[in-house]
Length: 273
Image (cartoon, rainbow, N blue to C red; front, side, top):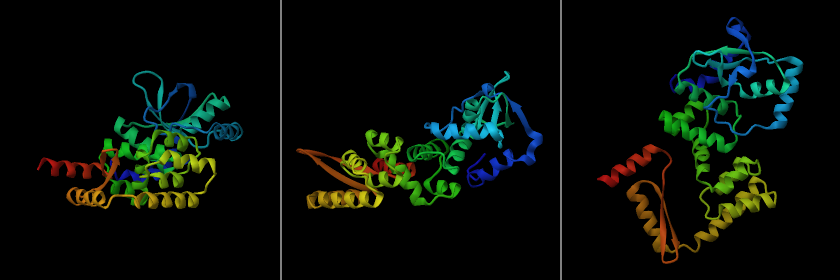
């Protein structure tokens, strides 16, 4: 598999799982299928699974799951279709349809991530981690991710920025208390947790959250020392990366932000020179 598969992944999976490929579909017991170790999705809605299980009891599993053989034994490892597998177990099915494919570990990981992203089964943080994993393990650039997944370049960048939020804010995102729109407004704020709690406690919509965050940033920027701001601008000019200086007592912290590892490599090359 290569990066060009991304855009055609849905068609690839649909072709594998279509009724027209009935000659390649087998019946296997759900108990013989091991979880997908490359599954980027960590949170499954129990109510949604129960609803799918009820549907499966009435109509059966309409689309086969995708699996690979596990070594020399008679077991399988899941590649795609985890919700169907879980719901089938809840429904108590003895057998479900499956298609057996032959994939390398790299291809398994790539399919697992891309399938979840394209079918919008991931929450914002899971999607951001999937993007980062594709970049780290498959050397995708943000531009290539954007093209392969049919997402805008700004969407990819905004998703990746969520990974910089405090852990406490990430918990609120995973719990569904903060949407992607809410979380995006918190990126780069000094008091992200305080703002997140304010959004949750007051049940603010995204527009209200944006307004409050913008006002707080304006208030904070008005207290910035012009000399410090000038130094930050000089650092940005020298590095080619957005920079920020935060004062803490008699000292402070210099922050240098990069959007991908290519920018980091370029920065390190400048330092070495």
